[in-house]
Image (cartoon, rainbow, N blue to C red):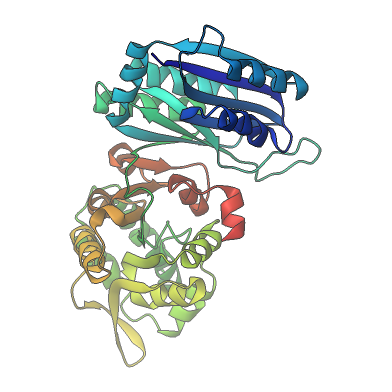
Length: 405
């Protein structure tokens, strides 16, 4: 009867180790059941699960592997695996898998301990941890230092709502971002990203900028704040604010557009998405004029926003056509997914205000970006500590891959 052995090799990494060990297994016609390898700071950890014929208590292949390990300055350990334990491991392969992503300015033991504690308490097992951020230099200071690790977990949370609450509490305590997603085929096959514009792609509310030019800044800002916090109906609040802009010269639109502050990371994110053949869209409760300006500036595929009525070179204080509110954003997201022949699970939506919640809920991956408290509390995923390019980590891209894209 055959037996199962787990071979573990650790020590200094060098080229040819896996080749040489595999050659020994090949010489003895050994069946490989599983294999995994990692290298951290030039130190190798190689694990190979093999099935050996029961020729004797000490199979010759193990002697050969041990001799080769000594030759390569590696430590070798051989662990027998009982048939019941092996079959239990095989049967576990159908368990659901999840991805937990930690994004911080710097990675510490407190971060990992917190994640490990939550995973364990909720019945999840960490199978793999991968660093997505680049290597950190200790010789030079980097003001934009960031750390991101991705944890692959196996199992089903005992209470999904409680798990999310624990992750939110830990993220707030440590001032980091933590995302938790189902690891399925759609997570690795997103193809459409929808962005809110104001306070998402740009770091301002355009209507507040226009109001300042019209001399009604305080009145409009108060209405804007209430609307973004979900205290006012969006459509009603928009009409009230636009009415205060009546008479504003259309030339002001260009002036305001030229000074719009692009959100950090937006250029890097859109450039990377375009290189990977993603489609991008602005779904905004703001105004088409500025959406199209951003479309040209960033290379966005589609723009849907509200149209300001202009007569004789001045704003009339009215809008033209259907208002793009929260419900309309979600509808447009569904229509665009259908147009692009995509499932909703393949879409991503990013926004900060209460009127973004419907599209965040509809998307396969909804991200509250530097969002209002109500939105942070409701959205599945939150980014509050990095720029827009932090989204790339949530779709599993490493800094190295982004540089190559």
